[in-house]
Length: 130
Image (tube, rainbow, N blue to C red):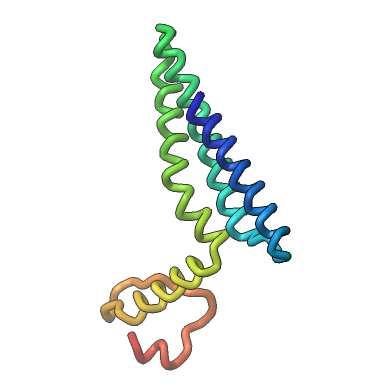
Protein backbone atom coordinates (compact mmCIF):
# COMPACT_ATOMS: atom_id res chain seq x y z
CA UNK A 1 0.00 0.00 0.00
CA UNK A 2 2.78 2.50 0.73
CA UNK A 3 4.23 1.81 -2.73
CA UNK A 4 0.92 2.67 -4.41
CA UNK A 5 0.67 5.86 -2.38
CA UNK A 6 4.20 6.89 -3.35
CA UNK A 7 3.51 6.17 -7.04
CA UNK A 8 0.26 8.18 -7.03
CA UNK A 9 1.70 11.17 -5.16
CA UNK A 10 4.87 11.25 -7.25
CA UNK A 11 2.90 11.01 -10.49
CA UNK A 12 0.60 13.84 -9.49
CA UNK A 13 3.61 15.97 -8.56
CA UNK A 14 5.22 15.26 -11.95
CA UNK A 15 2.04 16.27 -13.77
CA UNK A 16 1.73 19.48 -11.75
CA UNK A 17 5.38 20.37 -12.42
CA UNK A 18 4.87 19.72 -16.16
CA UNK A 19 1.77 21.94 -16.25
CA UNK A 20 3.50 24.72 -14.29
CA UNK A 21 6.59 24.53 -16.49
CA UNK A 22 4.52 24.69 -19.66
CA UNK A 23 2.65 27.77 -18.40
CA UNK A 24 5.89 29.42 -17.32
CA UNK A 25 7.46 28.97 -20.74
CA UNK A 26 4.26 29.81 -22.62
CA UNK A 27 4.17 26.44 -24.33
CA UNK A 28 1.57 23.73 -24.58
CA UNK A 29 1.95 20.69 -22.40
CA UNK A 30 3.24 17.66 -24.21
CA UNK A 31 0.07 15.62 -23.93
CA UNK A 32 1.76 12.59 -25.41
CA UNK A 33 4.04 12.30 -22.38
CA UNK A 34 1.21 12.94 -19.94
CA UNK A 35 -0.98 10.31 -21.61
CA UNK A 36 1.84 7.80 -21.41
CA UNK A 37 2.46 8.50 -17.73
CA UNK A 38 -1.23 8.45 -16.82
CA UNK A 39 -1.94 5.19 -18.66
CA UNK A 40 1.13 3.57 -17.13
CA UNK A 41 0.05 4.65 -13.65
CA UNK A 42 -3.51 3.46 -14.21
CA UNK A 43 -2.43 0.01 -15.37
CA UNK A 44 0.07 -0.23 -12.51
CA UNK A 45 -2.59 0.58 -9.92
CA UNK A 46 -5.15 -1.80 -11.44
CA UNK A 47 -2.62 -4.61 -11.56
CA UNK A 48 -1.03 -4.15 -8.13
CA UNK A 49 -3.98 -3.28 -5.87
CA UNK A 50 -5.14 -6.93 -5.84
CA UNK A 51 -1.57 -8.03 -5.06
CA UNK A 52 -1.49 -5.62 -2.11
CA UNK A 53 -4.72 -7.11 -0.79
CA UNK A 54 -3.44 -10.69 -1.20
CA UNK A 55 -0.15 -9.82 0.50
CA UNK A 56 -2.00 -8.13 3.38
CA UNK A 57 -4.16 -11.24 3.82
CA UNK A 58 -1.02 -13.38 3.85
CA UNK A 59 0.54 -11.19 6.57
CA UNK A 60 -2.66 -11.38 8.66
CA UNK A 61 -2.82 -15.17 8.26
CA UNK A 62 -5.97 -15.21 6.13
CA UNK A 63 -6.03 -18.13 3.69
CA UNK A 64 -7.13 -17.34 0.14
CA UNK A 65 -8.10 -19.72 -2.63
CA UNK A 66 -5.57 -20.67 -5.27
CA UNK A 67 -7.90 -19.19 -7.86
CA UNK A 68 -7.68 -15.71 -6.29
CA UNK A 69 -3.89 -15.94 -6.05
CA UNK A 70 -3.66 -17.12 -9.69
CA UNK A 71 -5.79 -14.18 -10.87
CA UNK A 72 -3.65 -11.80 -8.83
CA UNK A 73 -0.50 -13.07 -10.55
CA UNK A 74 -2.25 -12.68 -13.91
CA UNK A 75 -3.01 -9.03 -13.16
CA UNK A 76 0.59 -8.45 -12.11
CA UNK A 77 1.74 -9.80 -15.46
CA UNK A 78 -0.80 -7.54 -17.15
CA UNK A 79 1.23 -4.56 -15.95
CA UNK A 80 4.39 -5.93 -17.53
CA UNK A 81 2.74 -6.73 -20.87
CA UNK A 82 0.68 -3.56 -21.10
CA UNK A 83 3.68 -1.24 -21.28
CA UNK A 84 4.43 -2.25 -24.86
CA UNK A 85 0.86 -1.43 -25.94
CA UNK A 86 0.77 1.83 -23.97
CA UNK A 87 3.90 3.02 -25.75
CA UNK A 88 2.61 1.78 -29.12
CA UNK A 89 -0.60 3.78 -28.63
CA UNK A 90 0.76 7.00 -27.15
CA UNK A 91 4.32 7.52 -28.45
CA UNK A 92 4.51 8.53 -32.13
CA UNK A 93 8.25 7.87 -32.43
CA UNK A 94 7.73 4.33 -31.08
CA UNK A 95 4.97 3.78 -33.66
CA UNK A 96 7.35 4.89 -36.42
CA UNK A 97 10.07 2.60 -35.07
CA UNK A 98 7.71 -0.40 -35.04
CA UNK A 99 6.54 0.35 -38.56
CA UNK A 100 10.12 0.61 -39.84
CA UNK A 101 11.04 -2.68 -38.16
CA UNK A 102 8.02 -4.44 -39.70
CA UNK A 103 8.94 -3.15 -43.14
CA UNK A 104 12.55 -4.29 -42.62
CA UNK A 105 11.34 -7.72 -41.47
CA UNK A 106 9.19 -8.04 -44.59
CA UNK A 107 12.15 -7.19 -46.81
CA UNK A 108 14.43 -9.69 -45.09
CA UNK A 109 11.91 -12.53 -44.91
CA UNK A 110 13.04 -15.65 -46.77
CA UNK A 111 11.04 -16.70 -49.83
CA UNK A 112 8.16 -19.00 -49.12
CA UNK A 113 8.03 -18.11 -45.42
CA UNK A 114 5.06 -16.44 -43.76
CA UNK A 115 5.56 -12.74 -43.19
CA UNK A 116 3.60 -10.21 -41.23
CA UNK A 117 1.15 -8.50 -43.60
CA UNK A 118 0.91 -4.72 -43.46
CA UNK A 119 -2.26 -2.82 -44.28
CA UNK A 120 -3.14 -2.71 -48.00
CA UNK A 121 -1.86 -4.64 -50.97
CA UNK A 122 1.88 -4.91 -51.60
CA UNK A 123 3.33 -2.77 -54.35
CA UNK A 124 5.18 -4.41 -57.27
CA UNK A 125 8.48 -3.25 -55.72
CA UNK A 126 7.59 -5.00 -52.47
CA UNK A 127 6.71 -8.17 -54.36
CA UNK A 128 10.13 -8.17 -56.05
CA UNK A 129 11.79 -7.97 -52.62
CA UNK A 130 10.20 -11.26 -51.67
